Image 1: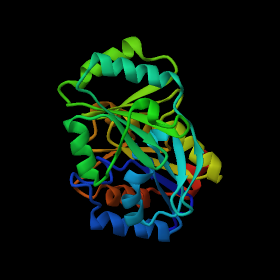
Image 2: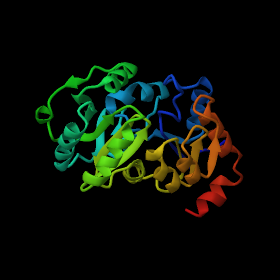
Image 3: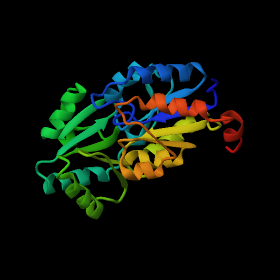
Length: 278
């Protein structure tokens, strides 16, 4: 099939990646066929450069991707940022407030290609081990201000709502907060989200005439899914994401990308009827 008018942008964790952080062979084959048919395939992930590198390599993606939950557009092939938005100075104030209020909090600062840890806990330790990353441990004032793209709060799922409630009351001005998984809560620059990042990606690459498909599972994917021409939620997605989606497919352990691409293939007159409305 001719997919040369289609752009798929997918979340990684909980969507394309299974629970062991692998990609199903059926999904890899479907993506390869989609790209061979002229389709463009890209990722929109909360991961930074270091954390996303392995997955992008497995996929062989030759198109820029949205990383840091929308704070940057990165070309992995050229190994360069095409665009980014740095954390505002007020983020330091909020970090110090969180450190004081929650002494056992875990805080990671994603900085260009490095991951800094200012406050370590077991959730951070498990995160770094699972991603096979060695972070740089540093005090907040030792980390360069330029190039900070997001702050990740790592806290046990049963305790993280306390952090969310605190930030909504005391730490909202000048930043955007997203709950990206049961144990991760993230501070981004104001106005930044995956939806905004995908818009910037389309603008930078001149792909505004393509039929856009977006897939995800968690709250940080919701706006991106709602904005897409075809928004897709996997079966393991939270309810609010499913409500925003046009299509719900199998869960992340059951080759969802194969199902999404088969659905696109089955759409009648996609190149004429659907695209003529864009």
